[in-house]
Structure formats: C-alpha cells, structure tokens
Length: 453
Image (cartoon, helix red, strand yellow):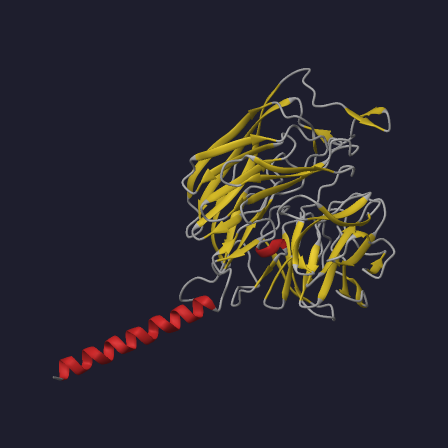
C-alpha cells in the first residue's frame, strides 16, 4: 500500500516536472535556432537571458574550432548544427581576369579589387554546436571567380539560411545556390548568373518566406538588377521582378504592415517594397542616394534604412502604403549623421541604434527619430564590419581588432564590458542554445557558462 501511494505521488511529481519543463521551453522561443543573417526575423535580437557578457581566450570560451579559408558569412544555428561557408584561395592563374565593369560608359577597375586571378574553392561546413566538432564539409564549387572581391572582404560573405530540414547557401558573385539536407546531401543547385558589383563582391544574403527562397540581386548599373524567388524544395523559379536599382549589398527584410506581408529592399535610387508571394511592387520611396550596404531594420510597422558613404543618411518609413510615398507622411523622419558604411543598425526595445564603422553610437526613438544620445564611443580604437546583435538589455559590437563591446541598451550610453578574443571579427555573431557563437578570422568560438561554474 505504501509503495503504491509513493508510486502515484512520484508519477504526479514527474508529470508536474515535465509540464514545468515544457512551459519553460515554450516561454523561451528561438533558444535553439538562429536560422539566418541576424537571426530571428533578420533583426539581430535574441530573447535569451543568462548569457555571459564577459569573456577572453581563457574565460567563458567553451570551445573554438579552426575554420579554413576566408569567409565573412555569419554562423547560423538549428538545434545541434551550425552552418558556415568559406572560400579557400588556390593557385595563381596568370592572365586570368574577372568580369569587366562599365560605369557611366567607361571601363572601371576597383582599386582594391583582388582575387580574380586565383582559383577559389567554395565550401560549406556543418559543426556540432555542443563541442565544435566538424560534422561534415562539402565543396560546393571550384574555379576562377566571376569578379574580384574587396581586399578586406571575402568570396563567402553571404550567410546561409536554414529551416531545420534544408540549408541554403549562396555564393553571390557567382550567382550560385547550393541546397543541402542536414546530413550534407546536396538536394539541388541553381545559377542566377554572375552578379557584378563594381569589383568588391556581393553582401546580400537570402531570406525565406513560407516555401520561397528570395534573393535580391543588384548589379553595377542596375540594368540587370532583380529580385527572384525560388521554390525552396526544388530550386524552380517562382517569380522574378526586374528593378532599375544600381548595385546594393543590403539583405532585404520581411515585415507585416496594413494586414499584409512586405519584402522591403534598400537601394541607391529607390527603396521598394514587394509582395513576397508574387514579387509585385507595393510601394516605393526615393532611395538613399549612397551605397546601400546596411540592411533595413524593423520596429513594428516602421522600417529604418541607412547608408554611410558617400553621404550619411538614416530614414524611417511606415510600411503598408502604396505607390510612391516620397515626401508623404509615411516618411517619418530623416537623420544625416552617425551612419555606417558597412554595419547595419539595430532596432531594440523602441530605439534604433546607429553605429559608425569606428564604433560611434547614436540612439534614436524608432518612431519619431528623436535623438536620445549622439557620439557614444567605445573605449579603444575600433573598426567595425560586423553588425550588432542584442540580448537581455545589452548590445554587442564586434570589431576587426578582435574586441566585442557590451553596450547597455537604452537612452543613456554606457559601455559595460570590453571582451577580447585576439583575432579579427567581420561576421555578425549568432545567439542560440544559451551561447554566443562568434566567427573570427580563423576560428569559430562558442561563448557560454560552463556547467557547474
């Protein structure tokens, strides 16, 4: 009788514990996934808490794994798998040249374009998120590249994207897409054609909308620019929309406004929103009139776009409109200081944070553009290429000097920590599984708190 009573109580306790565990798991979305460039919704924001905010090569680094070659693509995470791309430079091919660029009717060679005279091997890697072990490594493509890359850039700058069943990888200048299952089996590949971007490489990463894989492909003069959607399962083209927008490097963003889904693209001449299911244009606004490198960010139905060269401009547009919204009340504000050439801004808890390439921060109210602070500096010299990410009231800025600065979120600037790993960081970090995954120049790092510490 006693044993029977104990057993029923134990079963009840076990049921209660299981229910509590399930409730905790459901209350913490995105904990095991960071599936695309800048994670959930492409915004760089994690809901996780309890992550470490200080680390060094000897503190809170759970593991580090060497990554061959050169790549600025960010890690993406699904469950126990991390996916990365990289490009390995091979032998010199004397006389080899990439595509010719014609700018304003004249041949153009970018003064810092390199790499078109060497064979390149484009690889995709899967890494175990628990211990850093390389699970599989696949060669997607080998050959001479279509175009040069910027000497500070890479031929593997486009971040993969996954839905937990397939992982899609994109090598932009080549216009090549390779799709693998989680075990590394190639499921399909497709060519969008070579994409010429004034000799500095492609920065745009693909996005997923339901069963569609969408890629923004803007080239030199805009004569061949387009946005294209493929069936994610087969690679078959579903829609293709030409756009007269010259080269951009920004990844488009998806949002919902006015009861519909929108795909918002940044650009020099035009900012254009499309219906992601069909590619039909919904609205447009006068563009940034500068190099569209940073990706848009979203605060509710407000999308913020920016550029930092040759002019500084950030602007906010209330989505959900139609036609040309230039000069209408849907353009909520414009700000002409403090923007970056490369890193994207971040929208977090009602504010938009602009960050320059030297790590100078500006905080604005996302809906009104009201300035909360300007000129917020990091404590040591910094060069930024990675875009910021945020969690638990903190913003992380990672630098080419190997530092990650932890900034307190909110209307008052405060640097909480400076963490050094000792190698350049050009890729935006990923946050998943209670860890921060940072891709350095030569290694992938897992930052976390060791069990029992």
